[in-house]
Amino acid sequence: MYRTIKIKLDKSNELIQTARLWNAACQDVIDYGFAAHDYNKTRLNKATYKDLRQKYSTLPSALLQTARDQASDMLKRLKFEKKPFKHPFGAVRFDVRTMKVFLESGYCKLTTVFGRLRYDFQLAKYYEKYATWKVMNAQLKITKNACYLNVQVDQPDPEIIAGDKRIGVDLGINNIAVCSDNTFWQSGPVKAVKGKYQYLRSKIQSIGTRSAKRKLQTLSGRERRFQKDLNHQIANWIISKPYDVIALEDLTHIRNGKKNKKLGKWSFAELRSIVEYKAAAIGKKVVAIYPRYTSRTCSKCGFQKKENRNGRTFKCKRCGFQINADLNASRNIATFSRADRSRLPVNQPIVAS
Ligand SMILES: [Zn+2]
Image (cartoon, rainbow, N blue to C red):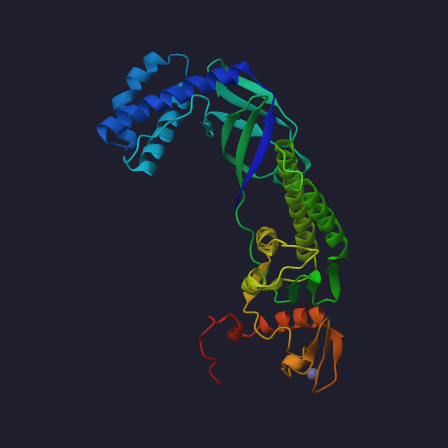
C-alpha cells in the first residue's frame, strides 16, 4: 500500500543547482535516445554515461543514473511519436541511494551537486500516521518560494480481518450517511454551509468582473476543501465503528439521481473512495451492493412494496413496522450484502433455489 507525503523544505540554492543540472542531463539522454530510437536503460547508459560524466562533472553518478532512468521512462511513454521535453526545473527523482528521509525526526539527507546535504522539515499532522512507513522514493519539486519533496511511503497491506460483523451504510441527501447501528450523519449543518456558498456564488456571479471571477475560483476551492474535509470525517466515523465489513450501495443511482436544492451535488463517490482506502488500511472489508429495493423492503419482515416508503418514513404494509426510511435502507444494505444475489450484475436473472 503506497501513500505520497508532501514535505516542504526551505528554498535552497544547492537544490536548485542540482535540479538544473539533473534536468539538463536528463534532456541530453532523451535527445540521444530519441535520435537512436532507443529507450533501453542499459544501452542508454552505455552510450551516454561517459560523455555526461564529463559534461556534468559535479553531478554524482547516482543522480546521473536516476536522470537516465527518468529519460528512459519518458521516451517509453511517448513511444517516439513525440520527443519528450524535460523542463529545466522539472521534478528531480530521488531513490534510496540518493536520499534518506527520517520522517519521525523531521529531516532528510539528499545527494546534491554539493555533496550530501541535510534539510529539516516539519511533518504535517495528518501525515504523522505514515511516519513509521518505509520510504521508497521521492520527487523534488522546485517552486518560486520553496522546494517540495513528494515522498512515496509503503507499508505491506494489513491482514484482512477474518470476522464478518457487518454494518450497512446508506448514503443520501436527507442524511449524508446513516448506519445500520442506528447512527446518523445529518446533512442539516452541511446544507447550511453549502447554502452559504451557493448564496455567495450567485452574488459574485452577478458582478461578472475579472476580480469577481477570481473570487469565484477561491470560493470554489474553499468549498471543495470543506467537502473533502467533511468526507474524511464521515469516513473516519464509519470505519471506526466496531464492524469488520462495511456494506455500501453501488452509487450509480445517486450520481444519476436528483440534486438536492440546499445540499447541491455532494461528492459521494469521493466519500466512498475515502472509506475504501481507509478501511483497507486497517484490514476491514468494503462491499458494494446493487441498490435495488433497499428503500422499499421491510428490514424486519422482508416484505417488499413501493408504498412501504412514504417520504422520510418507512411503514411496512404487511407487518406494520415503522422506522426512519434511511435507517431501514441501511439495515437492508447490511442484510443484502450477505446474499450473493445483491452483488450480481444488473441484468442477471435471479435463479430460484
Ligand atoms: Zn414488515
